[in-house]
Image (cartoon, rainbow, N blue to C red):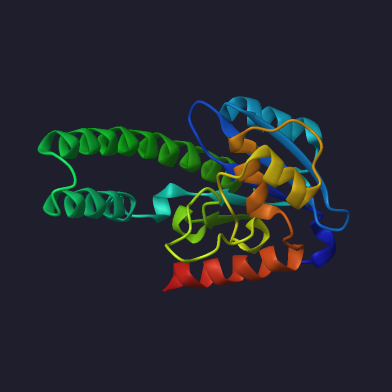
Length: 206
């Protein structure tokens, strides 16, 4: 895999209705964002003309089991119920919310698979990143702990527009999907992507 072939990293935050996409050039720190449907995102990338020199980095919910997605919320609500801090009705409400989240995750899984198939068919190398490998910027710190600076979080999600601008210097408009896509690739190098491609391929052979 030649180093001089690649110039760009393309980050993808996948959703059926609106996916976020970011094109990042490590050598210049240039960052461009967009969001839209699968078709709109692919069209935008083709119009940018970067794909032949790009490595894609895709957040892929398919890498997380349904148990991982739900277990923390289920444990939390059951613990509150056992301690008498919520009613049975509260438990049912929380479970209904979890079902809706599961439906959303299913749609995101389908969207991620579409992008995987697109990049695979186009011969463009891609990395798949599990949502569990990322850290939420909006997660409150534990009791007695100070919040961790956004710049120290691993591929942070849920950044505010202000946090994102402060971290990246990006001056354009953005939404949460586009910012989540950008944080998959911001500050990363082509060498980082190539090394992780090798690791990903080795895992697939096991």
